[in-house]
Picture 1 (cartoon, rainbow, N blue to C red):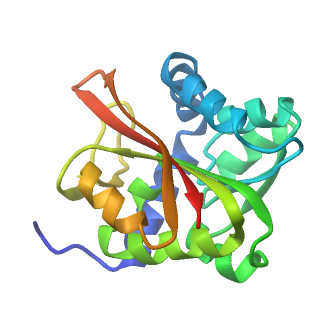
Picture 2 (cartoon, helix red, strand yellow):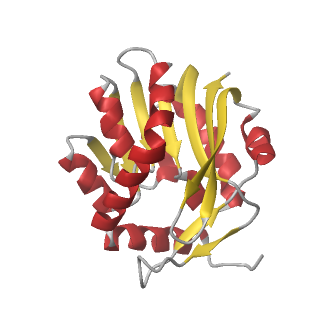
Length: 214
């Protein structure tokens, strides 16, 4: 694996991509949610308490978040991209543009019943993910639920997609055993699933977990 630029540069490249193509990502993620994401969101929402307070980490354009809000949950969307949060707010969601790696500095400890991080931690460099898991545990109540979605693989790298010319996004890939090791200090597993999805260039295996804070 090659050595890349500092974490801040990786972060800014991700933000640039989502800010440049907000409508395209809104459509793409909407299609994904309809085909694959809704079932995971249904499983997660089905075990949250009534009226749960849910933090969405890296919410993107807010498709799952709107689903949760329509179920009666109190949802806060957090995303590094200003344009993604604008789309969330247009859907009637509460949104905050902020560095999602700073949630422990913005939110009080143990205030959320659930945290949704579906395909958001994969934009963080792998060396930073263990610390991020600890921050997630910090803002969740004891017994709170953590929905985590990642993509199966070994490496981390920039991805250049022909649908989004002129930008690049960072992707960190994980194996199931890595996820178990990362989460075991703070969480017990509730649900896990490997799900293959069809992409334009290749198929992906998504790793989906629901975990409960110890």
